[in-house]
Image 1: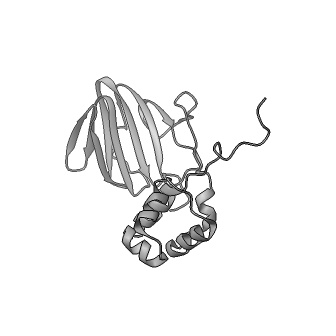
Image 2: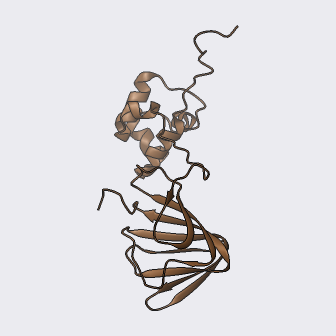
Length: 193
């Protein structure tokens, strides 16, 4: 029979990676953090590798030195899965394209679209713009021509083209069609505009 409450071994919290990423994001070395906390570099390294669990006072000391709320170490990340089969169909204006939103609708930081494009499917004859800061187009399969006002770039499977958002452009798949992933930063319909 299973115990009602999990044992500590089953619920050991992994905080090392969060501490390390916070330290690195601030440009601090292990030596600098050690000096700020009066802990040894080796001890902090062991904490960051989850080789040892610090006492509560030591954890508070580290969090204060990193200006990191202690509770953030124990928060579960907001992970959301969108399978291609469940991804909603959307219409971004592609002709001959089955366009699906593969990031959550509420996600405003980035928007990822997966397009299955029929042979010679396109974004239309006229150049258009998308309201975002950065747009990337990755070709999974097939070939795609991306036309700008001054040039055309041909992409093959595995190629990625990144350009500033709001740049007038259009695109056309080759004779075999294409599978395309579009990445828009921030999401084209985010409230951050």
